[in-house]
Length: 83
Image (cartoon, rainbow, N blue to C red; front, top):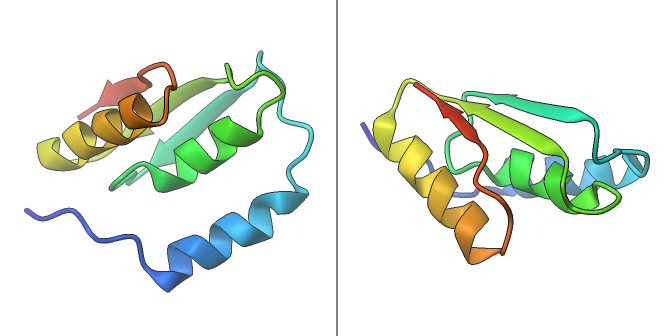
């Protein structure tokens, strides 16, 4: 399967999530159907110290590899990846 590009709907959702100012490092972010991981990464960036626990789930192995890559490229801990 293919991993979807980051489209305008994903970017709009990230903009909407600007109201999530109270994500603590002790919180767990769960992204089901993570694709590229952009939503989980966006919330991780908003966590107070950038160290919130992140779990990403997808049925596509390539999606999880892309998620790992995106977290690495942005300097974040690799999330728990669940196939």
